[in-house]
Picture 1: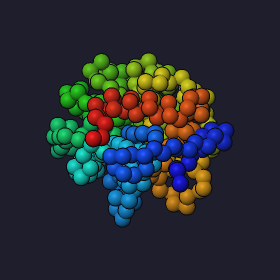
Picture 2: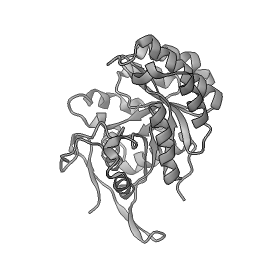
Picture 3: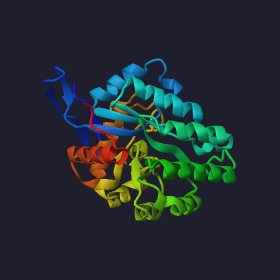
Picture 4: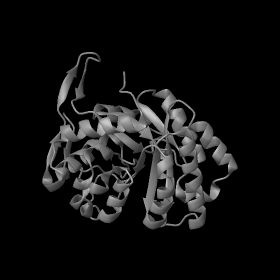
Length: 294
């Protein structure tokens, strides 16, 4: 059966299938790219290959594996080597782990960003919601990683939660030295969104928009994002879309559910899912400088 996905207001999105003569199998007509999934997370250790197969069957043809620590960034890169052209990686240290950022970390990240398959610096940024690392330490690690991005020229994959003022201020200092920037998993306010758009940032949209408890405010302003600056992501295994039907018992999110996020966002923006898929896929390939899979 074709994969199904509901959008806002009860919209049901059905992926159409076409015959793929090259592979002698049926494939989704829409092609999507998940620009942020944590596939090295231990929740995928038992069935990672099956997770990738489900994603490809759902039309998620390429995925960017998030690096959020020293070990995680290296593991993300190693995973891409097993799936060249389909998986890509970022290299960075999440603000939760900023306390462990050392000169050794710096050297490793600078090495990783020179390797084939690593397409962005990050996940880096600020998170004042939990303060797992002191705020001054977060700011220093953020600056150091922005310096790496400025030096190597790769795009930047950024995290911000409850830290807009400091985050915006630091990013503004570096913006002229950076190439492309995405504010990943954006959940902020409309004024915050406009400030990032004014700095020519891309906006990453996750399953947060599918959450009736906390994502409804976003539906009022995501239409403001220019079509050429929208990117889609699952942030798997986190943020499973709550509007999945039939419901899935597992709490783990997977890239195969990216079409549900796309369907919801398409409905919010008043465009067809095909059009949204085509635009966001083109955006992701341009942003990360990725070729289409051969």
